Image (cartoon, rainbow, N blue to C red; front, side):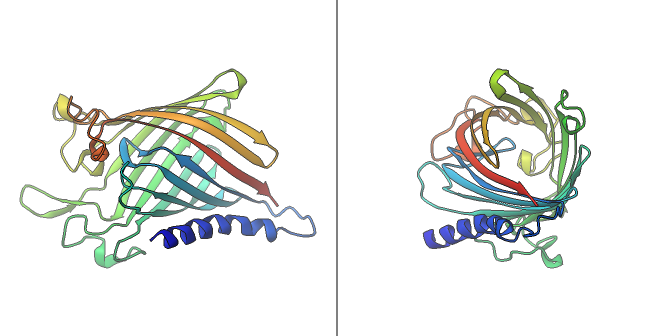
Length: 284
C-alpha cells in the first residue's frame, strides 16, 4: 500500500510539471496557465467533517481562457492512530472567469470496486454501496470583479454515485446531498488573510447523516462555521504559505460530540488543523 501511495503522489505532481517542459519554445503566448503543488495538513477537515489525520494533498491545475481541468489528491491516515492509509483522488473540469465558477468533480476513494461512474450504479441496490460520487458546483465570487469586496457564494450538489437513503416506505431514494457556503476574506496588514465561511445543507443528505434538517434545534442545518488564517510568501513563480483553520459543525451538536475520543474523530463537531503549502505557477 505504501508503494502505491508513493506512486500516486509522484504521478499527480509529475503531471503538473510536464507543461513546464512542453512550453512553446518560440515564446508565443498560448493563453495557457498551470499550477502544481501540495498542502501538508495536521488534519483533513472538509465542510464540517473530520476525514482524517496528518495528510499530504498534492494538486495540479491546467487552465485556458477560463476553462480548466484539475486533479487533487489526499494521502493520509484515517485517524490519529495511523492504522490505515486510504488515498483519495478527485478530478474537476469547469469554467472560472468573470467571477462565475461552474464545474463538476469526480470524487474517488481508493478501495472502491469501480472508478469511472456508470449508469449501473447511479442508483445501487444497497445504500451508498459506491465509493465514487459526481458533484456539480456553481458559484459567484464577487472578489474576482471587485477586489475590495471578496464575497463568495457557492452551491454544491451530488448528482451521481453513492448518495442514497431509504424513505419511510423502505424505498431507495437519491438524496442529492447539497452544501451551500457563503464566505468573505478579511485582508490584514502585511498580507495576512482571515477567511470566514458559513456552510449549510438545505435538506437531508450526507452532511446530515441522511437525517431531516430544520426540524428542531438539535438538527440545525448549519454544518460548517469556519475561520482560516493564512499568510503567503511569493517568490516570482513560487508561493509558500502557512495557515491555521478552525471549524465548528452545528448539526446535532451536543456535549458528547463537540470533542470525541481520538479514535472517533469523524463524529467530532469541533475541529482544527495547521498546515503549509508550496505551489509553482506559470503561463505560456
